[in-house]
Length: 99
Image (tube, rainbow, N blue to C red; front, side):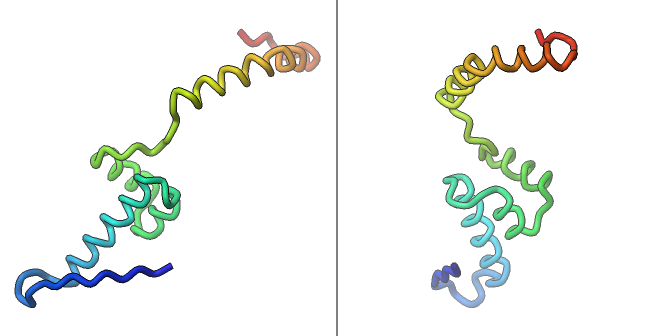
């Protein structure tokens, strides 16, 4: 999808190419922050490496991960459910005990 926005600015007020790129960058960061696009897409669209994108997000206070307390609680429930089977598989494999 391509989105075009018209902004009326005096010809001598700004470098239009620079402003266009700045607004594009801000839009991509906002879309990622709102989880409308994935990190990989934002990274690619911005022309950054994964590490550079992570650094940019950190500087902007944008969380890379959306891991809530509810997610954590669900993970603990899942581990509690699976743990007996994990221990059984470890015993049967002859591996050392997981503690």
